[in-house]
Length: 124
Image 1 (cartoon, helix red, strand yellow):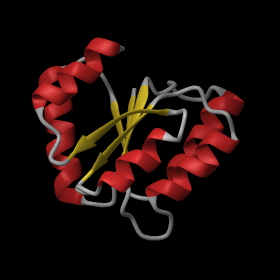
Image 2: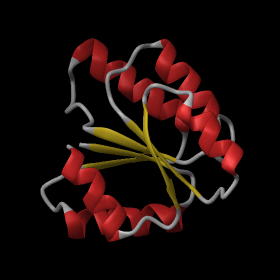
Image 3: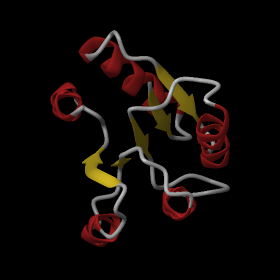
């Protein structure tokens, strides 16, 4: 299971399609709201009601709760799943900031490519 957390419908459609091409056996759960993603992850940890994510793809710029806020809450709960930042940001400060979060396994620029996703899959 891959959790895709991004508020952009077009990006989600593209990303899901790339995942289907590279790893058709993987399920994808899309969240347009970071708070809802945190709630779902809490349920997974507490109840094992659904499949655990292998990893998360996280956008940084979202309304209500941005990616940085998500990471803070995510790490406060000591979640075991790696997070890949998937962002349109080209700011080096964002990459440096992401590197300070232990759960962040990588920093990718949008749009997601099959090559980049193949590299992630090879790790897991």
